[in-house]
Image (cartoon, rainbow, N blue to C red; front, side):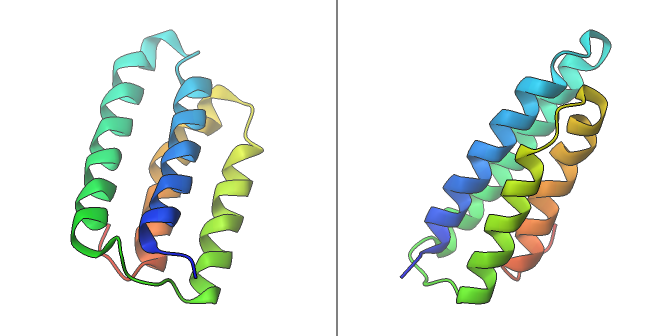
Length: 98
């Protein structure tokens, strides 16, 4: 059984990896930091409210695939795009509003 907290932790790792790549764009460094912080806070709120819930196997697969896909991003500008996309995909999969 996978909990929402576990999926959120996996997503947080993906966000950190994307932020590291995106931070290479020096003109966007603050934006990357702010975006990462905003989504980490949003996901933390979901974890606090629903973290112990069991995740449906389809949701687990969807989140894992999204995080895996994000992990393939090596271009800093694409990483910035994915930094906002990944959390929104995960929130949608968890039945939350972005």
